[in-house]
Picture 1 (cartoon, rainbow, N blue to C red):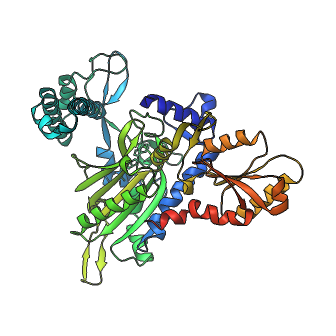
Picture 2: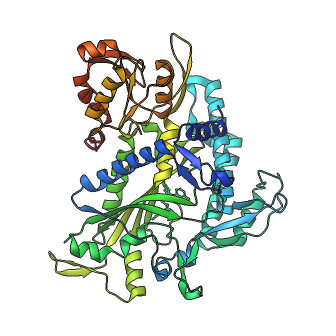
Picture 3: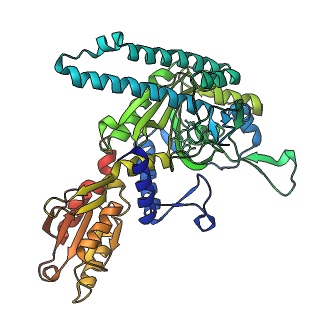
Length: 513
Ligand code: GAP
């Protein structure tokens, strides 16, 4: 199945089973804005819980915060967002479609990389065990030519971005003969900068003084509360502040479902450290965050680090954790060493001192910051795209679609299904739910055949289904069916908490960190 097809199927599945709906669908939708349905909201909450507990409960020097979306407009001047939170955009004059110029170039570079990989794989197949990839890369003319195009373009691209040279970005697009995917033409406008922040007005007077922004990142709410938290929590450096909240960006090209949205949620943690120790902490947080991802069991090979060539205006080191989405490896989370940029700027713009007094050395300083920043919606997409499985059932040959969501994060943990609607079976089933609902998200369903009910539970990723039958009334046992293996066994109802607790409890993830 092609990448586009996988994404299309996923979008349809998410809609059909109550994970994600297009926002304002009644009015034909709103571009790049989505609503989470009954199962989507549960899955989202579980991801938040896993992140929140991993960052706060598991670290005695990290505390939480919930700051407002509206903030003083000067904050965004201080942070650099008013002046520099721009994307370079370019329009195709024939299709009238708008693109991010940097993304067009990145896609061009990726295509060249893919061509090289194909060439290597072809040669490897032909030559077999004796194939020497290093030698092939150094001698094959097509590989060498593409490699040299990549190096030249990258060099020009990084320099153009660093110098804000929009003319050069357009030159690169023209020299690389990049065509509009819609019209196929190379008839481009000039490249222009476009600020991604949404503006609105505060209060009833509509003048320039009342202009405020919807926050494009949650991080600034943490920076401006640094002293509040440090003092009231009597926090000692190094320490961190974690926050989950909405962020808004007027993305030029918002596509690929919930990968790039205009309204999304971030889970960010700012870790305040002594200047000079930031690289040690940067490496520490890179490793910890990767471990957090890998613990979910979605395949070790599906993650990789990508160190940034071009650093943001605030960073002295930055890396992405990339995940293998249906459209290839893409950024899932960023880890940034932000120096003292933000706190110093807020000190300058507010005119108030933002410093930490170190009682051990009797020194005062502006702390450095290492940040971990992950998009909740993007994490959601990583999980559902990795979990979506179409398979043929051995034995019956039947097709089933199953969401193999990591069990601890599944929206529903246990479905309790009475075999029939009669003979006290529903009452027995409800009694099981009454016993388990305090610890596990349970679902009761009595409509349709057991087979159909199992399929519906597979489609939303429920790890366990128990069927209550006549024998249950006699000996207090049920049949438990496991989502991934479809195996079934007869167990005592009293055993259910232990069987399920082992896998679906968040503790099992947290203990592995
Ligand atoms: N405070 C740093 C910061 O905001 P970023 O790399 O711009 O850094 C961090 O964003 C993360 O937020 C990204 O790795 C991504 O997961 C998520 N993100 C950013 N823009 C997004 C968008 N338009 N839609 C969904 N998620 C987004």
